[in-house]
Image (tube, rainbow, N blue to C red; front, side):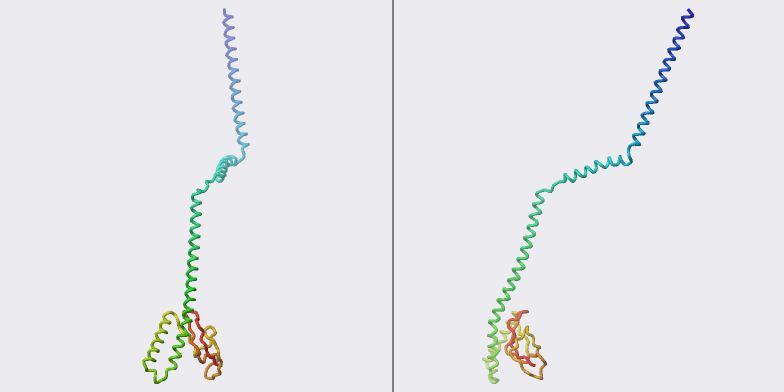
Length: 220
């Protein structure tokens, strides 16, 4: 009986030892696996170059910008039509303004030409008035006829002056081909060189343009 009890105890001890050995081997295997996993993680971290993570983050942003530029929102056709019509209206307004200015200038030029033509037709009448008054004798200057002619002549001259017509000064002035027409030359020591000595026919201006040049005699 004792021998059987001893055998059972020996078997129990062996069983415990074997179970302890298996647990130890399992623990060692787990630690080894953990060590290998840590080493692999380190190698992976070392293999990743610096800035790779930043490049990975920047790549989607660049792709988004490219897509945004590619799929840029097109202009509304109605806005384009409004801009086109607005530009057309501005151009037409500018053309109309230029046309108006050109038309006003042409009208003014035509008016000037018409006025000068009428004045040229009237000037011979003034010349005849002046010749008629110059022939009135001294003893007849106080007569009603002579006084009437004088008054009509003055009224005529005043009306022309109000319309912008004025006589060109000639006698005693230096000869100017822009205003004077020299038809005779005379030597006169009392006058300077190139001075108008006598006016043979009055010249007239309408505003700033010459209607008729003065017909003059130039000294020296």
